[in-house]
Image (cartoon, rainbow, N blue to C red; front, side, top):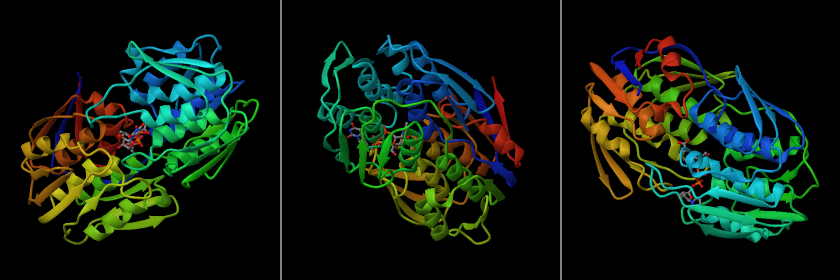
Amino acid sequence: MDKLIVQGGRRLKGTVSVSGSKNAALPIIVAATILAEQPSTLRNIPDLMDLQTLCHVLEGLGARLQFESGTLSIEPIDQKTYQAPYDLVRKMRASIYVLGPLITKLGRAKVSFPGGCAIGPRPVDLHLKGLKALGATIEIEGGYILAKADQLIGTEIELKGTNGSSVGATANVMMAAVLAKGITTIRDAACEPEIVDLANFLNKMGAQVSGGGTATVTIHGVEELHGTNYAVIPDRIEAGTFMIAGAVTNGDIFINNAIPTHMEALAEKLCQIGVQLDWQEKGVHITTPNPLVPADVGTDVYPGFPTDMQAQIMGLMALTPGMSVITESIFPDRFMHVSELNRMGAKILIDGDSAVIHGVNSLSGAPVMASDLRAGAVLILAGMAAKGETVISRVYHIDRGYEKIEKKLTNIGADIVRQK
Ligand code: EPZ
């Protein structure tokens, strides 16, 4: 298994470019593969483990996918296979995205029930609620979700969960409803930019989706969807991770392809902490001319502060003298990175769904372990800011969602080596 060896204390300087969004690409690839009648070409697709896993799931359904230099060419499924097996689904929860499209296109689906993961319980009750409301019958048997419907019928669906709206359930139900008969209205839909991108993509395939990015999404079902050519949005979480990389290393960096309207909550918080952000036409320039000040952060659904940036901002607060409190309301157990940061000299205590951070002047390099994607990202950030050497193991978590991260950071002055 690969390790990343990070030598701390290097100041980042230069320009880094953001890749396409993993979380936007996932449902868009599924929609293009299962729903369309003709081939599609997707651009700005990052080269990531999670996307490779998804492609294997879709190849198992009879599709043909070819990836080259950021472009994914897709020949849709052969319309015979409707099963997504445990072996593949367990590797990536987002495989559940095939459920809605398979039911609406083939009238049936057999998809392994996804398990929990390192960031805590990950229920799919809202996905199933939405698909049942559209008329699917759903049974759970032998660890599989078995779903059937001759024809889904549009209806009004409320998708609010205990922690707010659900990105995954909104995407799954949207993809099912585009070929349903009649009109579907999703209330309390997730408003994340990745949902807007999916709505735009579905419309480009001939769907009629309106209200993407608001709490009410309306879908007029159509008879069939055609193949198309589309570029996915840049990854706002990768962009945010680079912003914090600039801040923790007292750097001077320009982040190409960062989209300001996708990142308002993070940008506002970084300004409050004292990081200087200068938005330009193509991205954002990050410097830290002044001492940073502590701040409290609470994660929330979009447009609130993203849970996918919680670990990374904790790395910054760990190095900001004074007390900061981070409250995690989307995945209340998402604190696996705390013990690893503490091994590097941070002073962070977990109190229920909050982390209380007493900022220190410096961290020291240590052997640490990535427990999930963003928990891995913060270890790179902490390692770059720390004194000495940090050795990060279980790098495969990071590779699931960051394209060539050590290369991108090394290009702007970091000292990170991958040990195979
Ligand atoms: C998406 O996961 C992202 N994954 C996650 O990114 C992200 O952390 C999350 O949204 C929140 O923004 C992808 O897009 C592939 P949710 P998803 O359904 O869709 C509860 C990363 O690091 N819920 O919006 O699975 C759930 O427990 C990853 O890139 C239900 O109660 O998240 C949570 O509290 C990790 N029932 C809240 O809703 C359900 O059926 C939001 O989850 C579904 C979710």
